[in-house]
Image (cartoon, rainbow, N blue to C red; front, side, top):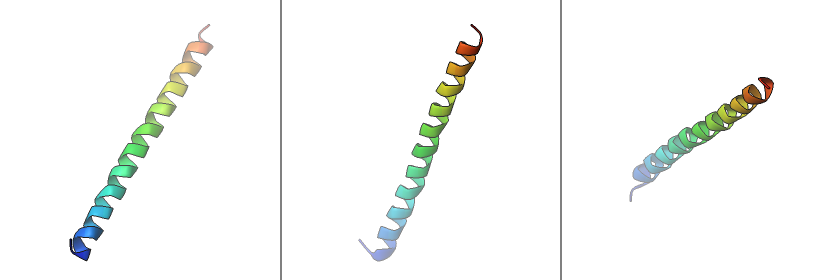
Length: 42
């Protein structure tokens, strides 16, 4: 694997990690908001 290929692979992995992390944060915030909404309605 050439250095250019390795750099491209690392760049793609980093981008994928950001997407996975963003999705995880989105779901955490979503569940938090749903919990607050359910507790507030009682």
